[in-house]
Amino acid sequence: MITFFVCLIALIAAYFLYGALLDRVVGIDSKADVPSKTHYDGVDYMPLPRWRIFLIQLLNIAGTGPIFGAILGACYGPVAFLWITLGGIFMGAMHDYVAGVISLRNGGKSLPETIGKYLGGGMRKLSLVMIPILMVLVGGVFIVTPSKILTSMTDIPYLWWVGIVIAYYFIATIMPVDKIIGKIYPLFGAALILMALAMFGVITFGNYDIPELTTVDNMHFNAENLPIIPTLFISIACGAISGFHATQSPLMARCMTNEKQSRPIFFGAMISESIIALIWAAVAMAFFGGVEGLNTWMQDNGSDAGLAVSTISVTTLGTLGSILALLGVVAAPITSGDTAFRSARLIVADMLNYDQKPIINRLIVSLPLFAIGIGIAFIDFDIIWRYFAWSNQALSVVTLWMITSWLMRRGSRWSIVALIPALFMTYICSSFVFVSNQFIGMGACDAAYIYGAAATAIIGGLMMLLIKKGLRNGGEI
Image (tube, rainbow, N blue to C red; front, side):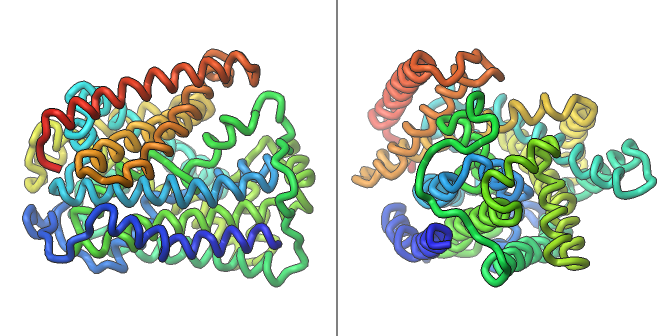
């Protein structure tokens, strides 16, 4: 258990050490005005208590990601601990924190607007297509998964559950943020933490052994087709870094009352998510008797991470486990689904400069988005998920380049904290295109990795040209 506890301590320490460094890098100003004051509208812009915002942010960015992704990533072996820890600290937490601060200082603007401001009009147009599609895709995914699970647990037909979930999403998306999200989501966020703490107790005090990191070899049962580089870094997204997070931060930036809240809300929520992912990766390996046992179980059960969560929870915690499993596989994805639709609404509204205070305006923007989401609910889930994971990480690449640009415009000598992650994730996403059979399908051969490196060099060069152009033109930061 030494590897597990070293990683856990590193994540906790990072909040106080690396988080404090980033406070200085971004220049947190406790006296600065915030969007909840300057743009108050009683719908999306309104002050909420810090503890509520933290729990809502954690739930928004988490969903089932740090649970399902961690279990799938655990099939690679203890090397997953390294990615969750190092990725969570130096990529995910930095990504969420600085992207959140950028939104906070730009009136709570949505991600496409800040991307456009710091990477240029062309990137804004690309993100205005890419990000709303991703948000509706997330919403569609989280219509399908809870509806299927609830159908299996009840006598109510799938279509009825789809209708119920969509109806809830619609109400939550157009209601003021303090009515449903502000009241219910902190409870679910706290329950997500309770679920992780319960699992921590199981592996700490139960008769379980967590494998140690003694090798970085790929232990996955399908190692030939799923190489660690780049597939592990795509499989474990929410527990390490996820572009989806930067779309959720503006929702909470509009509710903050002081810039000093940035570290606990943005950096702290991501570190918390990484801890949750670390715990579930450890639980998955320990419960099934090691990495080999986990791989055998996953092969026999179609790599169903939801079923793994249910089996582990019910076996180790009984009735409480059943409740927690229901939370993990139903409530958590539903809450991420509706904030995805809410984010899509705000992105479209920002793009059109369309006031969202009148409810009729919220309805006009939301209805087309939900029509697309309903259509997605009837597409083969495997097809949806296959491309969601990659596009999610591709969005993190764009966000990291935006952060690099923002830091360079500030004249910060610490722009390297974003530049290195930007180059790394650019390579991961580029090489995945060549390696994975979801795209070109060359497999884990030297040529695929060389092409990935070449693509990274080209993309990196183009991004630096955009950044240099922005530096020459100047403008607000």
